[in-house]
Length: 495
Image (tube, rainbow, N blue to C red; front, side, top):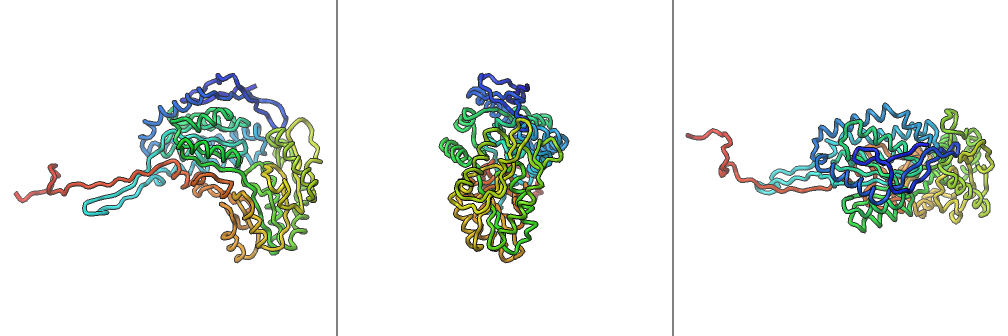
């Protein structure tokens, strides 16, 4: 049984609160580690370590910061397989999904490697007679990140590299369910040469979160998770005068028009709905099938579902692994039952799948004839359940997206360029895909939705991440004319 520690001031620190949480292997249902849950004093120690490191780190040259970030990037790449193994062991995702997560983490680290370009200010010479005005971007101080279980390696890298590159120091509170991958990445961070205290990790629950949100030395907080908790984090943090970016839940729609390539649309729906067991905020959970495409599309999706292999993530033949906890698996299964009771057609019932052992496995489900008043449509299920809502027209599908309280992502499948161009204007969501089911931006753009999917005015990583983790300082200067200066500038004289 592994005993996991906090990372404070560059040192592994055992928990002292007396409270712990179990960590499970979801493929077997067995406990593999004991995680300490931080008390207020332990959070304070992590913040103090970050505060102590801030003064020197914020004055470190861009050249030095860049060199360290490149070293970190290379260490993560060299250890990608080990990071992926830890993801599979504690989250359950299959190897390909785990390696993909590490690749997206590296994508964000690479963006931060260009910090010298990102932190360039602006300069106006002679804004007025003899007056120059210029803007520089300065770090905030100690910042915090609270990250979810579904991408425990990638989401911290949406935050840490940009924040640290900008000159801040960081306190990370990862998910209690799968802490080993972010801990390894934090250790690699130190191995790369970053000074102790620049990145600290405290494990915990609401006690740790609340202390980070109220601590007077924490200047900003970044959060990714469910909408109710995102709303809570945003309200609590901003009430203390902190900057907060809080990404919430989603109900992503994929519109399929009658002229779409049905084979491509079906392939995309299956990969987007059931990849990573549907436990991702950009998963497609609703297909809005327009007109007469619905019957052929549902049949094509069903045929592909029958070929999916569900098993341990360590088995390279598995297409989908278990869900993260037993309780979550049972909750997801409950939505399939409620959908049937409320009038949906259960085309494929994942509850009927049978698995050996005590792992948290659930088969994939496909629901047809779903309506907007059903629980399976209204709630974020966060599991391998795909709902099909039949729409008469394109306008009906667009309205369906607009009426939904979430606005993370939306996609359309069509061969019509005009319809695609219109959809990117009409879709009421922060990220839009055209014949792309999961439109997650690359690291040099930014990630974030609209409506109940985002609280705060900045999205995550990329250019918006730089803006969030810095504040502008505008400097206006006037200097005496050289003729009146008392300093000998070495100019030739008439003598």
